[in-house]
Image 1: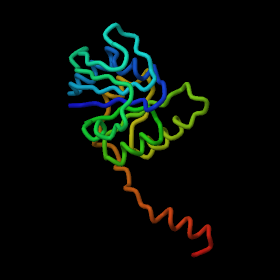
Image 2: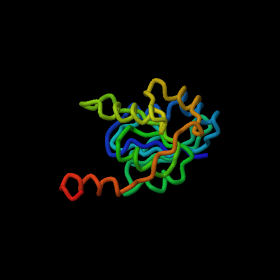
Image 3: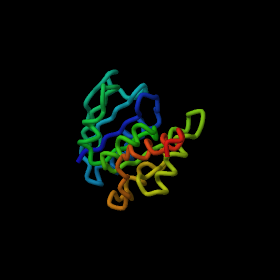
Image 4: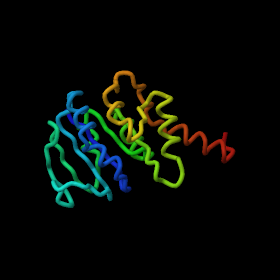
Length: 170
């Protein structure tokens, strides 16, 4: 089974390091995941195994592909059995619209707490599981995708109605 970890276009060293740490990889392996794809963005990796741009390594029973950026992460999201992501709104919406199980880790180093607010609200609604770097392994261990609430499909008519109301057409 495949887990895809993404930090988007930002730098989130803590999530990247956590994703390839022994506690997280062992938990993923024990949960049935044998492959991890890590999109690291501008994050640094402190490992002699990592050669700079991309690499393939094996740690704690998990095969890991690491790369910086691609034009799209759609294919990785579609293939993944689980997505672990920073709490960026674009990534969250893309993954939830695909109906994929999602664990988000808000980046506490950002200037405001918009990631935390969004993650918390969607966790409360049951669409995803929000966690911290410190609790990532335990969250994976206890995570039950069947308990998630399906995210509603996009409905463009709501926006049209809102614009019509604001313009005085209805």
